[in-house]
Amino acid sequence: MAVDRSGAAYITGTLTTGSISLGSYSLSSGTTSSFFVAKFNSGGSIAWAQSALPANNTYCGSYSIAADDSNHIYISGTEQRAKLTTASFSLSNYSVSIIDTLDGDDPSFILKLDTTGKVLCSSVLMAGGAYQNTVTSDSTGRFVYMGGMFRESFSIGNDVLNNKTGGFDTYAGRWDPCGTCDFEAIATPSSATICDGQSIVLTAGGGTSYTWSPATGLSATTGDSVIANPTVNTTYTITGTAIGGCTSIITDTVLILPAPNIPTITITVTGDSLISSANSYNQWNFDGQLINDSTRQVLVIKGHAKGWYSVTVTNPANGCSSTSDSTTSIKQLFSISNQLSIYPNPFNNNITIKISPTVTTISTWNLQLNDVLGRTVYIKTSLDYNNELDLSGLPAGIYFISVSNDKGRQVFPIVKHS
Image (cartoon, rainbow, N blue to C red):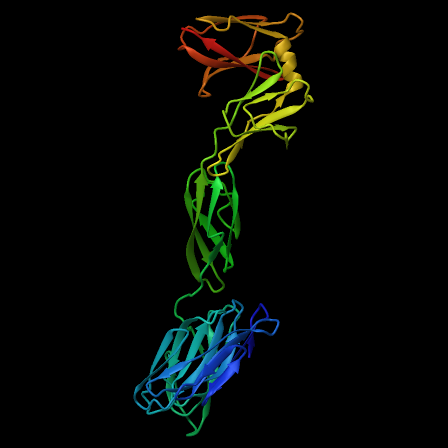
């Protein structure tokens, strides 16, 4: 019996004739002797069981089972009575072929399985009469050790073992059961879809260390967990390394759903309403909390509490949303509205912006002019009490003047006729 790091137990044994039942699993030896392997969960319930299927009059049996720190399972056993023929058996759809070159002197084998019972690889020892083979693994799972008795000379790699007693001698050897790594890294989630501007945590597992590429949109390029915030669909390559230096390369794709344009807020000149730049799918918020039944483009704020307002726009097709860049302090913007005059509106070439003489300091006042697409077409970083803007170079259309000071900001729509 062997126990892995999760507490699951594994057993193996030889079926000489007939069948046995383990839980709901019925295992048969077939027409010759065979062997079985079964897994029990840490609570004692059976997880799975399976038996080998011999072919070509093969008689096979298992002697020992072991588990390494990476939860790989190893089974040792022998094939019997092949007598100068090719013998074979299969387990979990994995076939092992053995040619007995020593006239029936029982070649030995090692199988490596994962925790689901899948055979990952095997090694066959063309041995002379090896018996009672006991298998174990080092902590890395890189090498497997097997020992037992033998009665004919055989080789383990470049080492030749000669029988010196004429009876049964003992031996011990080390194997690389696969020759190559079977380690496979995993990614969680294996693929993801997020809205533009959002981020997601990607996690790798199965190994001991990981590298990520490309670095675009990642919080780090090493470690088992990273934060991904790409702006376009991106496939990340994860290279995982396991104990013993084995590597595994997998990919994880993050798909980006388009989010609505970030909305802007306009306050009416009268100061009693807010207007979202989005025509529909709005949700107004006050001090970070949504305002019930406030989904229209215009929010009437007259009589509402003074504070910070914002608007969130949602794309109904994919659920992605965007919130206005900065909330708007109604109390502060009222003061700007009461201290500012803009005329004529509509206008042709020039427009005048006057600040009330009651304002004691205007050093922090400035303005920015944007078109309907949000592009900045004019900036004035400092204002006088009386400002006449020459906008004759702009085409006719609707524009938005944003006036700011150290107390807040207010946006005014204006119309140019020619």
